[in-house]
Length: 158
Image (cartoon, rainbow, N blue to C red; front, top):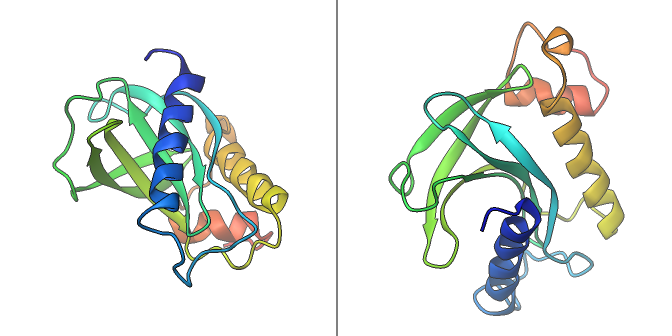
């Protein structure tokens, strides 16, 4: 799959299946949310990761920044932690392998998802995160960290 929308939709479809099976009925689910792939687009994460797609996966139990590498057949070992600089922020991703979607990496943004009262508020937050991470180098902060990212989203200067 080379079409970004097709790859992002395959990821979302896989997590819909997980929501309908393994996660069904668990008390940590926000019942107003559905699985959605938000604004996946081509991104280069540096020489260690290469190119791929970056976007946000919203589920009823979590919101993750997700990296779908161009090469879905290889990557870091499952469970390995990888750190990347995005938009002036240093973020840690956890490597995963799925039998259907191959290798991918995710960075937890929110879990559980009870602070979101409707799907649009989750989508808006996902898009705000991506806007911060995709900003031009001149707009990037001098003190990158995941904590500072959320502070900036909340309007709190570090």
